[in-house]
Image 1 (cartoon, helix red, strand yellow):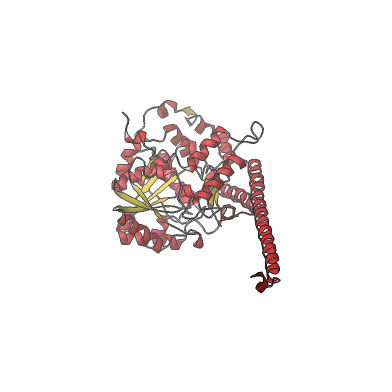
Image 2 (image 1 turned 90 degrees about the horizontal axis):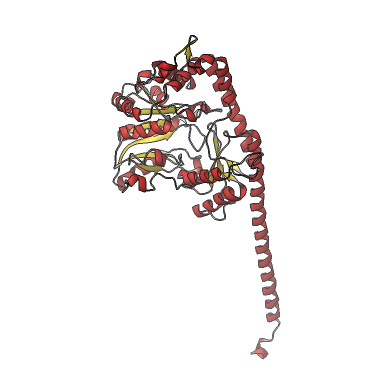
Length: 467
């Protein structure tokens, strides 16, 4: 009696990425009330700079109190607003995006569509650009939620662009072409490429060479590029962040057909840590896409109160400049704390320069180099160690043993607890493995001694008389 959507498991909720969250919610860590609980390290949330936001709110009570020049505008904000959004907010958001990109590219507020977070933005773009039987190519490893965001309601397929640890999971032309040919074999029409820059889960920003490869490929195949740049303000180390818009400007492609096939997704969830405010956006030079997406945005609007508050915050250039610099500094410091803790446990990470997580190499802790062994390791870390981390298989990584570990959604003290736990676990695995290897060597040695003993005894026999 229910729809296929309601009854099927195509949402992806059975992924280990979501299952880990469910276990955490049943037994979440608390320093005092539940010190043996599970530490949430599967949530890419930024809680490192809330004090800066709270300080601004205290200094700007009119914005928080929905006042303009001391007069209440509550009734104005409480009434219905159309889906085009507040001009003041769109202007401030467009300027903030340019500031993050060091003003190397500008954004026209009229080409910006507001959505209830980047989840809504990505799905809306899929509805605008593709339909059932079409596909988008995505570099692996990729954010597990894309199986829900891009596919569940739109019925658009994802075809992975398999990237390898041999070159730091960088995109290559051969990998792009292989994915494109795989889509054709599956009888799917490729409508575009979706990239996340900086990458989630890798924590790396794309190089100019990678961006140029993607642009050249998209031009040759006549397909779209969707660039999810939600982590653009978290880049804390070199190389600097390069937007897909900047890559096209550098190649002087503004007046070509490719310019209308570039679409950018952004949100305030990561850079400002405002995931609960549900503020996302689509930016496109394609008038038809902007028009259709604006109409679709009525299914997920950003509240008037939120727009008013944030338009004032983002318009304060002195604050945004200070915030971005300090936030990046704090992310870098916290990331170094995670890396040092993992190194102390004998665990390495992919070198990264952005994001709220690290791509962690635990291949040496696997019992076998298989995804079954990866799942077994993940379950142990979740249930026995008490850490919810995301296995690489949930991110469609083609190599077992990689995990995403988040570090910005907890206090430094909680991260310290997590590092002690992982250190003890890694040492126990290494110790048990060494013990097993020692026992095996001892058994082999005993067998050799026994064999040598019998060989020596046999060689002393008079074979003629024994015969």
